[in-house]
Amino acid sequence: MSWLLAIVVGGVVGWLYSYAVRPERRIIWADIVAGAVGGLLGVWFFANLLGIGFPLTTAVGTFTLLGMIWAIVGSIIVAAIVQALIPERSVQTGRAYYEETERRRKDEEDRLHRR
Image (cartoon, rainbow, N blue to C red; front, side, top):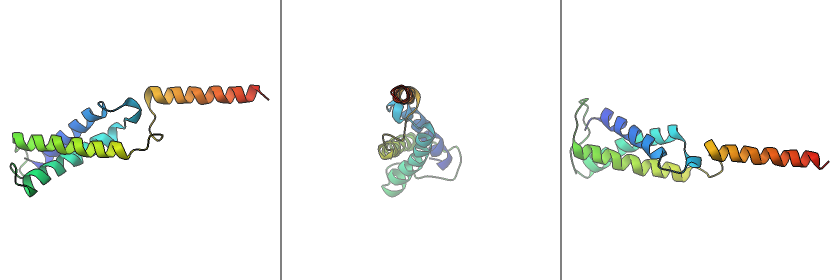
């Protein structure tokens, strides 16, 4: 499988993976990068090191089904590791961010009215 194709497949799988996790933990760019790296690592590990399938090639456009499967497996594993390493409080987007902002605003208003 071509290394360029492994990056593209991994990036797409990482992007799709970002929609599978909880919305408050979603960092799309991190999942895309993790997926791309995982796609390369998956094909490299399974095909090149273990010899299951065809190794990475420099010929752009080389495609194998087994290489695609290894790219998907690798990108899911690396994206899951990246998601596990993200601290819970550092990621707040969408609804969770809005609710936290509203709670802080109300707490601040209550504190000011008590004076």
